[in-house]
Amino acid sequence: MDEIRMDKQASPHNEFPPSTRQVRLDHHDSVRSHVHQQVRTEVERLERRVEILRLAKAPHVAVMISAYERMIDRKKGFLQNWELDERRYY
Image 1 (cartoon, rainbow, N blue to C red):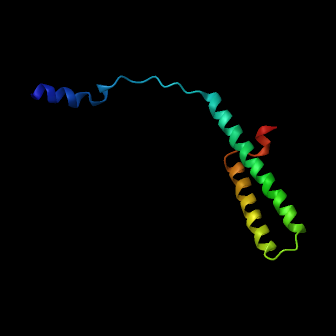
Image 2: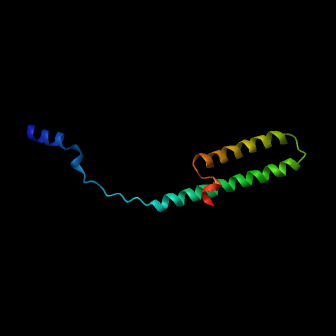
Image 3: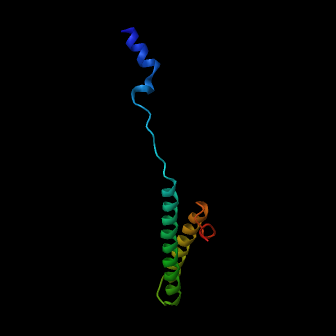
């Protein structure tokens, strides 16, 4: 029994053979490009909403514009922090 116990303690990681994991780097760039495009589209949509709201004479327009501008700033900050801003894609 001591021999069996020693074998298990000596090689706990040898129970499963090491897997050969294939890393596909092209997927990384594809995901980055997709995220960039998606966030950029969201920013453009929000900027159009702000333009439309500036022309509106409705109550609480200033609050809505402020909220949209904060969202735009956060999304642009995300793009910059993750190096997804426009400079990378030109």
